[in-house]
Image (cartoon, rainbow, N blue to C red; front, top):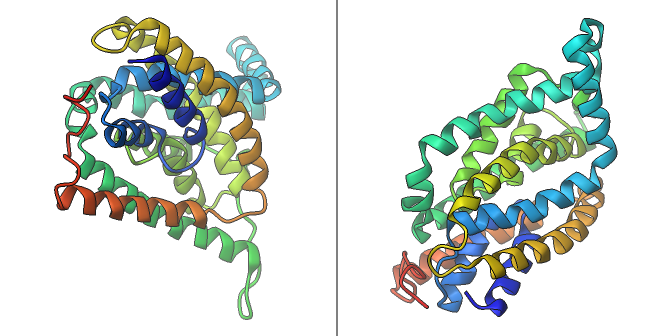
Length: 290
């Protein structure tokens, strides 16, 4: 991998990680369209450490408060009813599904799941799911002629059941094209949470899973066509770009609809179907390029 490739892929990772459009799919598609080698699951996981570091810094006050309360709850039973302490436990509970499936499906994640036809399908299907979830949230927020405005749930109402459902939604993002934020935010909206609450828990939930995945994949860094230098460079680029994106996205979701992302996902998926169907793009494009 050249330094130019690593810069572009780091830029793509930073731009797409927090948006509900799938960073792993965009890294895969960037390589395919540019006739580069597929950067692979290991490269993707490691560069996500950069974007998750941006999350840690952006939510540093929340994280410090949650971790502090959680640690205290280990020794003080009275603290276990504290909201921040419960959030700490719920992040752990919500991380179980992706941890189990990530290890179980490792071979599929690095192989069959990267087929462009599957990516096209997940882009479209999850685009429709996000659109439905967004529409239901908008209806509750706006009310109507014969329908009162409906209050949506906040993170104070998050329990173990919803935490596990969030976790299962996050685990779906092991398939490129699904989108970690897209799946978890959609799940949150469908369960009746506000946009801001769904996004906030989505980003907090991703921290242990992404960091664990990235650290696990470090052993494979530097193998094949992807060397250590470009990987680290891409991770640094992803951090700076990702921080700017997450700051913008948290402001965006407080007042805006997710429909632009829904339309983009569906159009990109259809375009990918056409390119693969007409033979203009091989479903395994990039695996032998270079």
